[in-house]
Length: 209
Image (cartoon, rainbow, N blue to C red; front, top):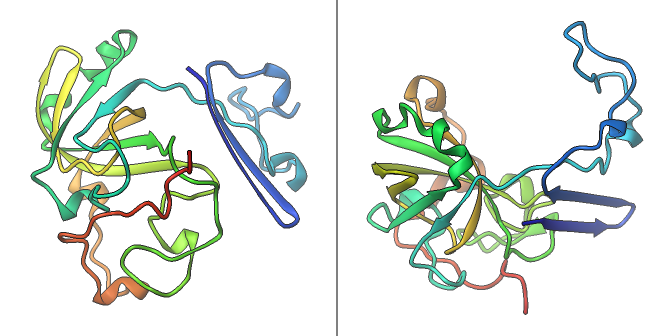
């Protein structure tokens, strides 16, 4: 299954392709000491818009068929449950995952609208830069959610705190580890007076049919 999303802005074009396979001719000639391609000294125009290939490793099932009414963050509705179906060829990678209470899900916003650099987020009426928000209309349509892992049955993960659409393509799973993932902070920008509790999405960032 191939996903392709691209966004064009004034004097800028970004694209991301999710598919199987990487062309060996797409890498620069200089290699690192370990034999891996190095992009550190590549011209900026070589890196800009460079396609990156990813394969879905599964799909996420949730109660939400459309953006309207979907929780905007997993922390805002932790009782909402779903399942994560892992494709059989990746089953071995689930070993030892059941020992973690929370996991990160990385996925494709496959039904999000085209990318925008300025958006009005759900929790604020003022226009904000896309990188200062969690809005899905991003140059690369990649989402991330920290969900509770309720159990694993074969290649199916039962999770709680889902905030993505049913059938969302899964790109990766990582364990949530407080020592790695939790940092006390004193600044949270425009979000300081906001809370996602009980807030649900509308269709402002959903791809129009």
